[in-house]
Length: 217
Image (cartoon, rainbow, N blue to C red; front, side, top):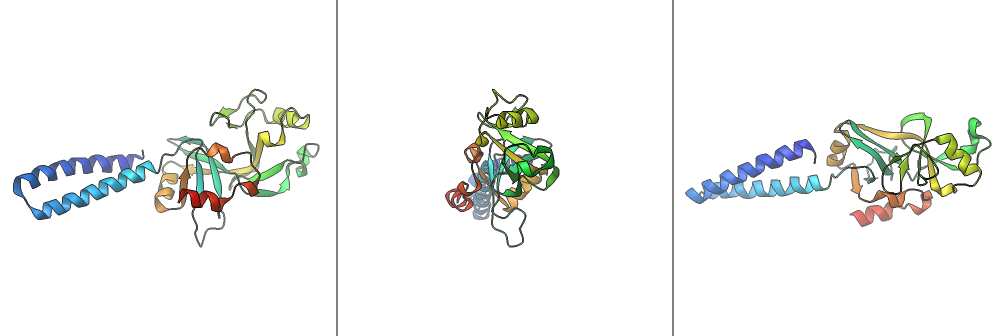
């Protein structure tokens, strides 16, 4: 729970307790009205905190915005979430070049590259689901791992030890400083979807933003 919301809830709980005692003792109608408003606000902040269970493995769905082009209909898989902020990858937008079109990897298989986000676009990142083959990855969920021995992963894919859909490659990533993602969710920029691992390792046309958005709403 976001610390600001937690403080608000604690303050409202104390306030409601004081109102109940005072209203019971005086029968004051105005105080009863304030009590009702406090209960509504407490319910709202409880709902808000419940909708912001940010953790690795969730998916963010961008909400429609007239001035938003960068993340228009984006589906973002969150891989890291700490007190310092959050990190994730756009998993439904293809990069215009394939992996083997990069000079360093011209002998690799033509794996699709994805536009992971606007941060560090000069670097490659990857997710995979073969920890028994690819060493050094960090578990995001039970079946999705972030990073690891990249060259070994490419070699395994080239010699067919792992399938093309066992890994997903990204140019860049999405990053948020502490509190930034929570603020954007509160402002209505994102919807949070639990169990986002089911959307990873799928071709972009199978991740239908409209369907996910409609189901969440």
